[in-house]
Length: 197
Figure 1 (tube, rainbow, N blue to C red):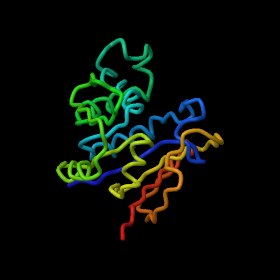
Figure 2 (cartoon, rainbow, N blue to C red):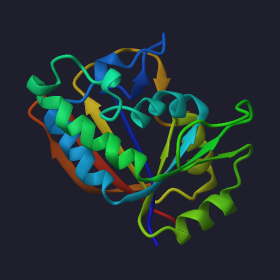
Figure 3 (cartoon, rainbow, N blue to C red):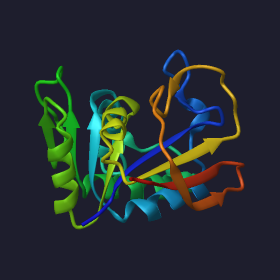
Figure 4 (cartoon, helix red, strand yellow):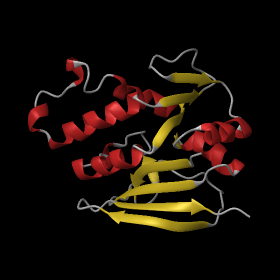
């Protein structure tokens, strides 16, 4: 049995993308990417909303299809850790929650048209490892339903003022800090247990 984990990368003031949907301010360094890879080895499945799935589909071919590789891959320290992440991503089961998609085009991926907290919780219980839930809209359903075990945030040292918040407005919850890590780039990772009862 694993844990349901909501992790996000964003600005110091809590936005995962700016008002135009751009998240280029939060591109991980090789050091951060290696750390993310190590954590992702504990994940056996990913749950996505449609928008995040459409971003993450990139990993289906990255590092495999020569056309997806940068020209200077051999000199880029980020390439090897990025390629490793692609391998991890392709090796996991994925479930996409969407009312607008008719099909998905990546391997090991299922499509569900509604969110059932009980079904998601059972899915997590049946997994051999942790399950990640991604995308603030989907995560908001799980957070409000009280089925998320941990939340994690990678705060980049930038303030953007507005955009897509990583946590749902109005959500209140007591948390317990269980881990933190600082990176050379100034990014801070904080992990919290969601306290129940």
